[in-house]
Length: 331
Image (cartoon, rainbow, N blue to C red):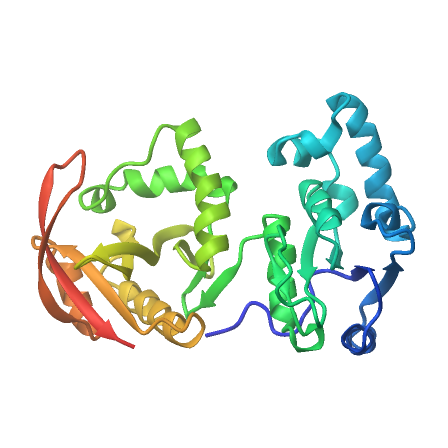
């Protein structure tokens, strides 16, 4: 499996907004500079992280833009605006290439609303301090570069590439993939075993929520499968949450476009996801549910090393109640 991020930064500048310097920060600055990153440090002198932001050369364009947006949003400004409203007001371009690391919760929350990639930082002695930022780190020099890359990618809605096989690329979905996804789900070989997508606007909202919640919170979900040569969307596969015997479990799922079936792609993609679940996500066991009539999926489950656990039923909506086999694999 080829890792999509391997100590290669997807941002070029780090701004440290801090209440005070410490040894961890000094080590991080030294290491970051040696890796070619531009580092700017803003130390709070007035006791307010918000005041400190205005002293940053890299943040000044963003803050000036936010002042314009405050006027457009009215008296309460961006602080009171919804996250979606704040982000659509136009600070994204100014935030490109920039990662902010701060131990000030107010500054972190404000910058996140503007679409800036932000990592909250709990300094030594403040490990139990509450933080509203989506991502919080400790022991700054020990944080892997890939994690900071992930924070930046999430802030800018850059899909994470999960794996590359000999013939495919597996990556997270984006809003831009929706038209091709409708084509995939309209394929008779796919539609036979799956529920259709929602109407476009509803599916768009569902996709946005899925990306923000499933990918961000769990670090996995259902991904898209593309032909590595042509870039064509040929399937969907990944890991979902499922309740089995009253326990939350991780379930492997996969679909492959009809004209690409019977070519070993299901096994190629499925085995790569099993490895990713074990080696990257640290998942201890995977489950698989397939309809009893789906002989191809049953055969693939066995080839992937899953063993039969039992039977189940589920309501598929448009197709009614379906009889299924449950399979399990220890990783």
